Length: 53
Image (cartoon, helix red, strand yellow):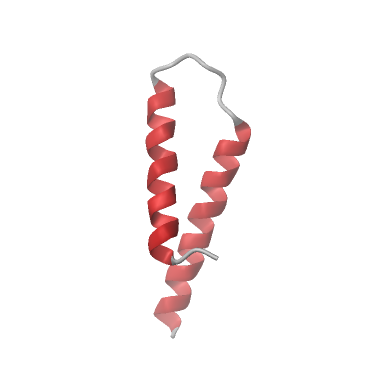
C-alpha cells in the first residue's frame, strides 16, 4: 500500500503526463484516465478517514 503522500505524488505525475498529451495528437489511453480517477478516489477516501479519526 502507498501512503497518502505517495498517492498524491503519483497523482501529480499522472496529471503532468496528461498535460503533455494535450499538446500531442495521440489517442488517449483509457487506462490512464481510469487510474487517475481511482487514485483521486483513494486520496479523497483517505483524507475523509483521517478527518473522522
